[in-house]
Image 1 (cartoon, rainbow, N blue to C red):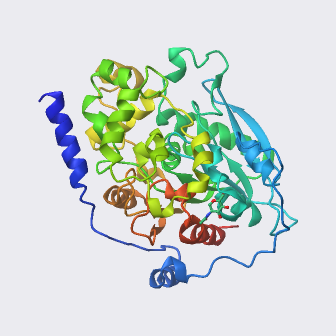
Image 2 (image 1 turned 60 degrees about the vertical axis):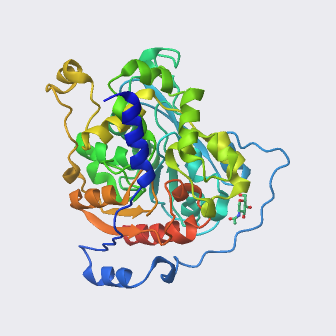
Length: 434
Ligand SMILES: *[C@@H]1O[C@H](CO)[C@@H](O)[C@H](O)[C@H]1NC(C)=O
């Protein structure tokens, strides 16, 4: 089949965009009585967590210092720390920490929470929308010790003990390594600094993949989690609506792909941006959104997008990754499996001792898992989330966001993210506090 006819097929399948049936399974295997309560209400009807103390008014400093996660957190008057970790293979990554909030419980030990961002994003995701609706701030004000993770290759992960981003080898990674090496390095830092042994985890998109990968590859870390909250959870991507599916047919034609996506660091060419824009931008009223690779790949939901926040969002994303990471997603589209990166036959023999990349074993996940998904999510399509939910042996809650157009990025910056997702997430998290 020629490239053009393959492209046409992909376009047609994108255009027809028939989404899976609506479904909602809610269960709590530990406490059936509780699950009934959850099942009977919609999210909005369940009152949000305990009453919060009124926070003293804050004024913005005259000069904005919001070009880093640390600056953003400081700007809102919250305490912030930066901790640097080195992975087993030499990547040097900054994590950010909001050790306590401005309201909520004052004394006593705080339970650490790790918030892990997704593809092309960074620790800034969780604080861009400010103290009223940023999950990082909300959790700090609820009394948690909030840690914001990053990954190799993004804004805060562009250093290495011996390589530089100018070296091709620097970019030889995908989310396999983020889950197997970056996440454990960050957990080691949290164990060391907090002196605590049990954490909550909340991840978005690729930040959920990293958790599944870690649970399979690094069993020694599995028992450190009180609960795991997966927003826009991703594993298999058979039903992915993202234009990532467009590159999928060409993953083996490396030359074409590298030209379009950037040689090693993911720096999409203008031709590729134009192609994506021509596919998805017709109905989009905001030109700024169409110039962002993040929105082009993830889609956007006009009703939930706060235009005032757009410049800030665009100044922090795309936060960078490798072309190989994108290729890994595209390989998954083709393989219809949740599996390790495919290095080709010889490479696979070298890396895995077998010709095909091994699949990840989701039954190894033993944390109490909560899934939060959107009906209109291009990356975490409802049918794929359902497949994931069937693989997880320790699934406790499975929540469809009560908003039909809820899209992938709404979990981070949606105008109603607090009401529709975070209030619920925090309520569920508290159930698993020790
Ligand atoms: C939009 O974002 C701005 C800046 O963060 C905020 O002040 C405003 O309340 C937000 N609007 C809505 C509708 O959430």
